[in-house]
Length: 211
View 1 (spheres, rainbow, N blue to C red):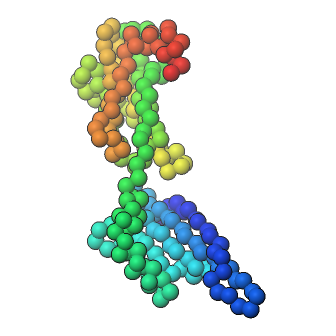
View 2 (spheres, one colour; view 1 turned 180 degrees about the horizontal axis):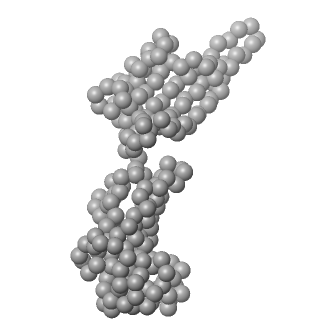
View 3 (cartoon, rainbow, N blue to C red; view 1 turned 45 degrees about the vertical axis):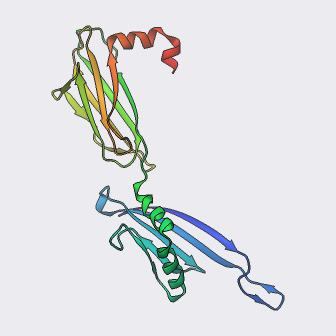
């Protein structure tokens, strides 16, 4: 089970005063994301710790609506009851699971070739989260299935993903190739086109090539 953990530590001012002595108390909040059994399903946990003792916890697997706060000790019971009564706080915490990152899509030939020669067109998609994604190739509006090879889903190491879907083809004059990508971060599919004419334009125009 993989886990991503963010620790927030706050050294609070004195909560208890004794004779001319100020005592400090350590409050910690740990946010963790678990990926059970290597799946893409995320379990989100927030642990509140007071002086090295966990007092309250939020777990997205608890309750019927995507998570709730519960007391781990009696000291945390008032806090758990309070946070559960705050609808905006509860909804915001539950919404952490809905975080998405949009993909960056680039289309290019693996190696420039003249027309009517075998070419490998690459649709590179990277920087997206969650990992569920659909990438398809089209030629002149018709989906291409033969000659399509995918690297599969590759972790970037920062909890985002990348993939490359390649199309082996023999481009003809006037043909337009389209990579169509669907991802939960978008309302609908996004398409990126490639054609020999567009490729020539990109190479001949310094402004377009650098954009």
